[in-house]
Image (cartoon, rainbow, N blue to C red; front, side):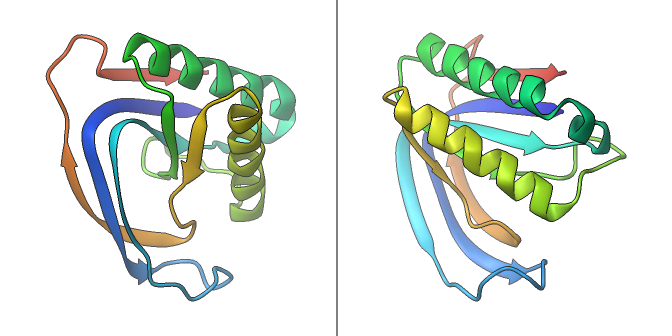
Length: 136
């Protein structure tokens, strides 16, 4: 798994292009302030270590959220951080389970629409722990 975490003062998106045929047809626009956004790339080999990878994902997101003094976390599937990737259904399921675990731990967690390219409007501060990359 590759995980790019960016703390943002503002994260706004609008669905633009549907890139996964099985995704539902939706039009969505949303803005969240003071939020940690996790750009998540689930790799093919993660399918062999599903539980371990999911736990590391959740722990890293919680740690980075605490370091940035927020309880808001957005999970965003971003299949552009590695050369291999897991299938869309596996990826969607892992992100959904991680979201559920974060919510059960008291975080205000949500996902961006899966299977869409989004128009983004972001503002991110230049703090030392505002941008963190992990590979596991």
